[in-house]
Image (cartoon, rainbow, N blue to C red; front, side, top):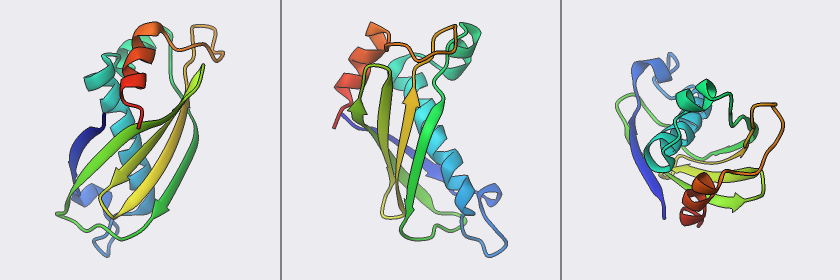
Length: 129
C-alpha cells in the first residue's frame, strides 16, 4: 500500500530563480514521513514527543532528477521499502522530480533503539512495497 499526498511548491520553497532550493526537498521528505505517521499510523510526532518517544532520521539519500518550479503541484508517494526490528527505510518520490530514501529508528524513553510497538509494526508491514 502506498501513501500519497500532494504538495504545492510555494514561494518559501524556491530560490531567486524560482526553482526549489534543494534543502527544501529534504523538508518535504520529512513532511511526508511525519504526515504518514499522523494519518496512516496514528502516531503523530507531537504525541510521540509528549510520550518521550521518537523516531529520528539516521540516513537520508536524495536523487534529484528534474527541477520543480513555483506553482507546481507534485504528487508525492511513500512506501516502506525495508522494515527492521528497530528501523524502517521509506522510499519517497515526487513524480519524476526526485527519489529519496529516509531511514528512521524507533526510540523509547531511554533514547536507545527499541523494537517497533506492535500496532505501529502492523501498519508499517501493510505499507511495505
